[in-house]
Length: 374
Image 1 (cartoon, rainbow, N blue to C red):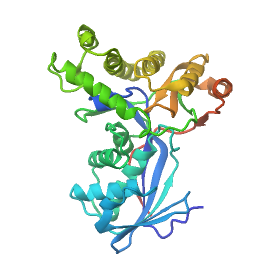
Image 2 (cartoon, rainbow, N blue to C red; image 1 turned 45 degrees about the vertical axis):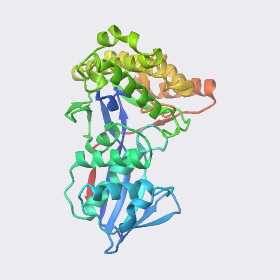
Image 3 (tube, rainbow, N blue to C red; image 1 turned 30 degrees about the vertical axis):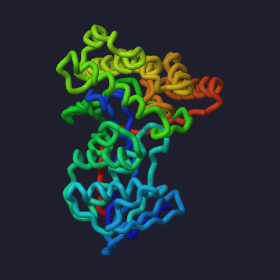
Image 4 (tube, rainbow, N blue to C red; image 1 turned 90 degrees about the horizontal axis):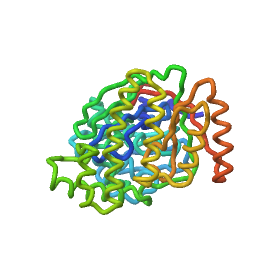
């Protein structure tokens, strides 16, 4: 049981699942994530000192950060994200005061459901709350993204932090990652449910090929800009890419092809969501996974096996990997009447093929930042 009696506020931010639009956020594309009820929660109180004191509900560690040394904690194992967030929030012109933080995370680590974004966003929101500052969730997301890039070394786009901060219960966010324009689309699944499954193969984005993929699509953009007046790869149409594919190395063409076609899939998926066409949405999810596997090559044996096991089940309309890949989760659209059998059959087949037993998460589509006075 967590003792929260000494804290003043409970501040939380959401993990996220991305329904469609994978590896296009850093290419200026549109994505369609949902914030989840899996969250990172920060219990906070101002302490009147020049230190930020951190404790965790699942770790024995206790860490104190001095306010005048926030930029010097990059090597800390567990608190570098929090120090980085505090430093960058202050650099952005905000007040940071001494406070006590108790952190409790229900977003599974290494799952591809953005535990790091939830930690970053909730930390900044808690620091702002302790300092009695007004919260702008978009600004919080932008500073959190910068913290991920600098302190985790991941050249991430804005999607994860934006969804964590700006999610709306019962809705997906159709987010233009170039302009930050958004549309909330109600998630009306009819007789279907969203099922999230973790392949339970740990991943680490810094050690993976995530940054390498970014470099590859940046190379494609540089070359395509010589022929088209574009500012990001998402502005390129599939037929335009094919017209000039000869100027790209085959592997660079494959990466760019995924991006421009995934952007088209997002557009069609949004239409399917608005009209409640779950069969069409399922087809789009399947096509997205195939592209991520063969063109962008960020799935691997485990995610492919898990997605294919789901796709082959009669209750499933579509399934794909979600998140950065190299491990993590799949998201599936499944008939509610078949969800329990789906979980069992998929788990058995996946374990037989890989030796791993998947985990399934029961969660709701949630709000982003939530601040409660205790």
